[in-house]
Length: 371
Image 1 (cartoon, rainbow, N blue to C red):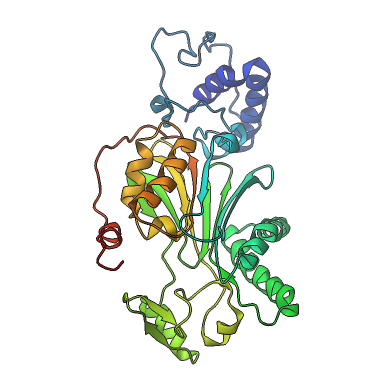
Image 2: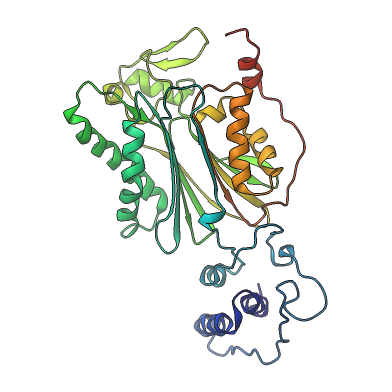
């Protein structure tokens, strides 16, 4: 991306002071790369008062012109990362993130969710789906972010950070529950870290999910940890555990737990249930990526990923999307807690869809055959 484009965007987004600061930063970067290259802004046309005509050319400018789409969420640009990566990176605002959590038909809501600006350049998003009581989910809600924040100061690789944090939280929960020997709570954990608005890293245990909408299609960032997976089932059996199926054909570890990885569930740790997450790192392309969605199984069991993606793309903003998805899961027949976080990216609003996706799970639950 040319220097002129970055400077024109900086001027229209933040005024003269931001533009001058951008010029100094770009000048320093260019002098380091080539001492003989000099930055000159004297030939740049003056900007108008509109961000849609920053060069006063009379031609309207859209985010697609800069490699980003934004027709309904107007966010400023992250200038230092944009200069570093050579592409415009919009700032993700916590105030624009959509969240919803409904109790469903359960006696209590054991789901927890959390989002925060963890550091100056790292955002934190997480969902936890507790079972056997809310204690494990509550513990992760209180301490997961703290463990991650303590680790990022000394470790650059965010996948390593998430792996260490999950394992440390699991150990801390074991110590916490030492005074309650009869308690066997556990929880899923799906955590996403967004660094510099462009590096997305996800870690997960259990069957809560993370999904990225790219070019209108659902891109799964997590894979459920269930005994149906050959690799997971093999680890359970090698550890001395076994897998049984209930009357609905759902596999369980030792007839008790529907997942092979979790935080907590310490009575099954010697049977192969582990707290080590599977992680994934992706580089966002804001011209194609519309949003990140974190969901618990109250939604996942009743709606497939593409259906969730399509419904969210029909909504005006992420807050409406989160509420609509959680309510729709209940209407479709989900009896579990339903929790969702929707994080908008540069292509929010670009890929609208009115297609209805078929969901076998919803048809199965809604049929009444198993009621």
